[in-house]
Every structure is written in structure tokens, then in C-alpha cells.
Length: 121
Ligand code: FES
Image 1 (cartoon, rainbow, N blue to C red):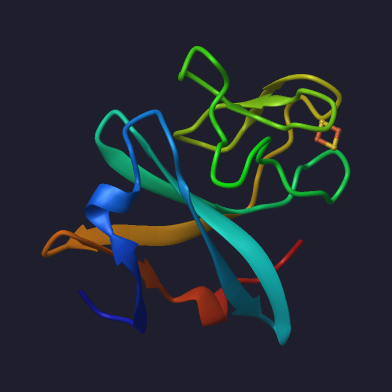
Image 2 (image 1 turned 180 degrees about the vertical axis):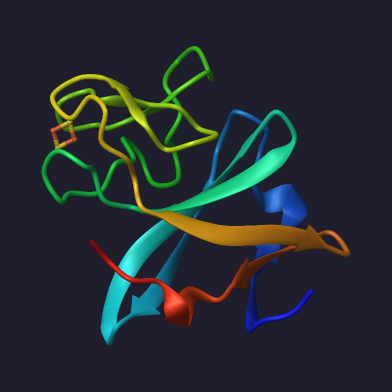
């Protein structure tokens, strides 16, 4: 796979519809919290920042899914997000999106791709 890649964690550190993995990423000179979750077998990563107010989402460290395990949820005002797209499906920021990061799995490890090219909006 082409592009800069960085090892984030082992694959078994990210549980299907369960506990995720937090890490830091530097984007345009700013260090930001980010996270990886697993949903329907695929890993997804986002900047750990709600689309409503720029606060971290997890209700306990690394816990991003709601009790159903179907949606990501913001611990502050309860916005729910689709894990596969980061789109807010309900709550004060409905229709807005989490900022995605590109991750993939390789040899039972999760790699981040091209974070330095990410543009915040
Ligand atoms: S800060 Fe996330 S829903 Fe308000």
C-alpha cells in the first residue's frame, strides 16, 4: 500500500463493537486525540472530537459505542454517530460528521495512513 503509514496498535486491542483504542495524531502541527473502533469486522478511525462542541466523545477511556453496540455516542450531550461513516444520526449535530482518518490492518496490526495530509475543516 502506497503512502506514509504508522503503527497504531495490535488488531486485538480493538474489540468488535466494544472497546476502542485511543491515540494521538499530529495534524497541521496540532496534536489531537483520535480513536479506532471495530464495526462489522472493519476498523474505523476518527478524530476524537464531537461535531457539536469540540470535546472528546468517550464516556470512559476507549469506550465509544453506546450500550447497543450499534452506534458511537458522545458522552456530553448524547449525539449518536454511524460507526461506518461518522455521520451524526441523532442529537444536536445531526447530519454533521466526525473527521475520519484512514486506517487498515496488516499482519494483525492496525496502521494509520497519510495522517499528515489530512486537512481539518
Ligand atoms: S458535545 Fe457531543 S453532543 Fe454535544
